[in-house]
Image (cartoon, rainbow, N blue to C red):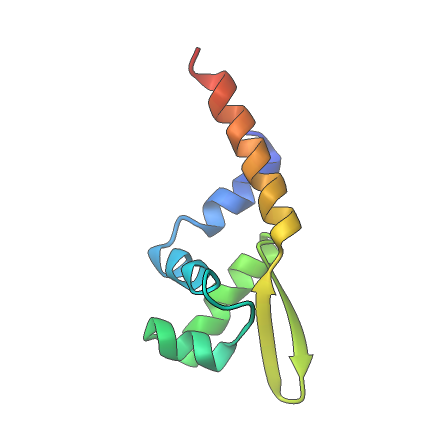
Length: 94
């Protein structure tokens, strides 16, 4: 059984659009909601909804600068989730 702690992580990454959003951070440290919406090809409100899911799961962090909300990966939390998931995979299928 998957540990409860990593379920929000897996659920947040279950969407192809959210995965696409996360891939944007491979070449950028931070992005605004507007930039994400444009790069992924979705509306700004849809981008905000998808970002909120990733933020609730602890995958992204945000800060506000004026009217813009800037998102960036929570690398420490992501690494923690990955270690837990790796441990699960190493022990599940013996």
